[in-house]
Length: 186
Ligand SMILES: [Fe+2]
Ligand SMILES: [Fe+2]
Image 1: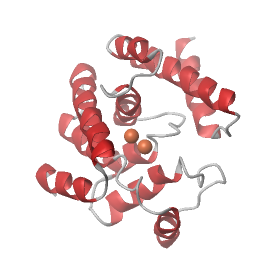
Image 2: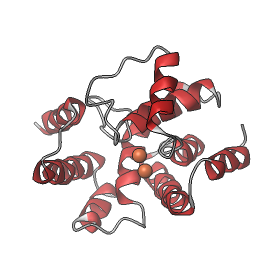
Image 3: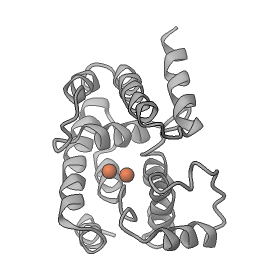
Image 4: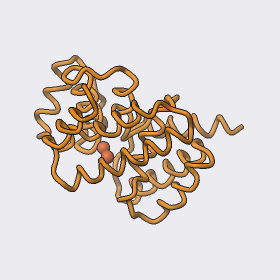
């Protein structure tokens, strides 16, 4: 698919607010890809598609992952996380995207231990695109142009404290992603 065709699919699958978040994410993903030497075209495709199923009814998302034999943990099946997996399944099986783009979609919410460069870029682009205004976002944005690893750790720390303060469950992949980045510093 061309990028123009992808944008049409994205537009038809979400409302204006999420489309605008997606556009911000594409801009930030491109910026980070240029800064860190990742493939800009793949970064843009992954960013366009990262929330492609977020507005799909939950039951449909479950059917989509089931149909492709994807086994999810209980936390991965949660309302906030499942769209990463259903989105990767749609990108792979319905839109014909390759594994690099699909991996970046799959791990854009929880992250995981040993992320690829593209996966890191999409995780950070989603968190720090220009529409994000939470306390501390400027700090992560600044770190992202200095050190991807520092930006990720800071992003994990902020995300985890929000989840803890809300009393929410935490997917183990994010803990493992943080441990992995911390270990690289030693
Ligand atoms: Fe998302
Ligand atoms: Fe997003």
